[in-house]
Image 1 (cartoon, one colour):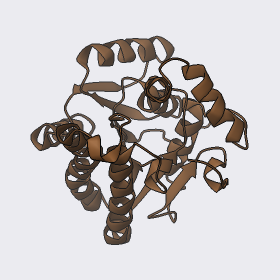
Image 2 (cartoon, one colour):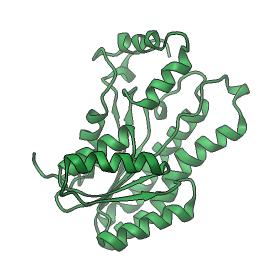
Image 3 (cartoon, one colour):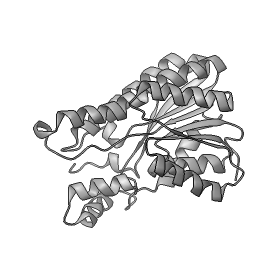
Image 4 (cartoon, one colour):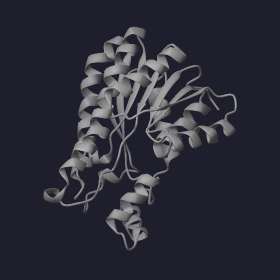
Length: 264
């Protein structure tokens, strides 16, 4: 495999499962030195053990941290600089779904929690990673928005609000840091077959989540849900040196579904 990230230091948050884990595997396959950040210590340990079996010579730095706590974010950034000397790539991925509920019934504390993790977790990461990249004169940042960050879905107000915010933050940071050799982009995945997606489908139809999945697949031009490795492949390009003029873009990866006019 072409070593697109050979010798590059990359941080991935939410790395223990789902899109973060898939990106961790792809980055290691492409030669990166990895810092895997996650709130779930047990899950992170298991993830690192699994990747070490596949990549026994890989450099992996596991860090337990809550991305909604700025001091812990500063801590993981400082640790990566201490161990690897620099930060070349940052996959700002950690996030939560919240729940499906009518807008006026949405629990305010849960709404705040979704924003704390999905928005402030991204903001804190940028606040502490961008100065390092600016000083280096090089950096690649990939935030995680969603198709929910470019349009809305019913009963999903906190998640949609948070992912729209990530899209906006991405564009703003890109304007400010591009002149320093730092490009900032975002991926906006559609429904990807992960544990989070399974939970979302169950919330949509607790009695028959398979029927909810079929509804998504039937209206998708590709006819299926996405795979985590398909998002990871896009992320690796965005983290690589050749992604030097793509800046401030929210790249939708959803099989074309967001172009379909139909029920939400």
